[in-house]
Image (cartoon, rainbow, N blue to C red; front, side, top):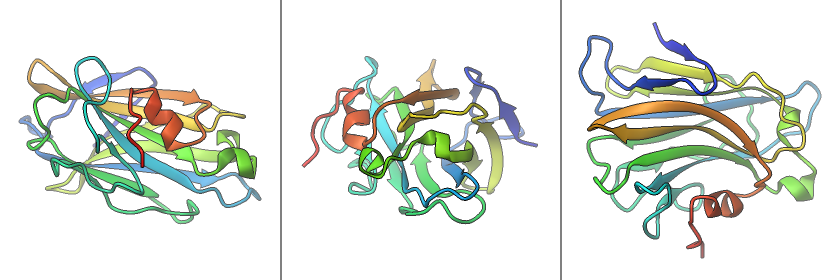
Length: 194
């Protein structure tokens, strides 16, 4: 049975019977509020060193850079409307391949052209992040964002981080005014967009 997290809660990422997870699917989902416009939300992963900042070019995995240079993190694609049940976008993380200089992977969502389209997270319902064991397809944990975020155009959903040699998850749910992945990534020291 998956663990349902609350904001700020942290858990170890381990298999049901114990043992370390090797590969996980990070699913992010949302629904457009009733009678609302189609909203193109973009899920991204930002790999950071011990100081919470990116280290090199390619450390942001998003719709224009679908795979980290190490091969440890990749996106399965871009959902342009948020339509349909289940995960709207997925990022796959091979925890055994994440280079040791990376201590954290932040999972963020931004609204594409939020300012131009006058869209924000107040127009979105049922946002969540979940982690699934890629080997068994079993959901390990889920964090449903229950707050309303009118006017906010970016969101840090959560992060996987390394502590004492083990991977853990932190449910963050922090809304921001970063209406693009360029602005969001700058929070993590990343300015290498082309």
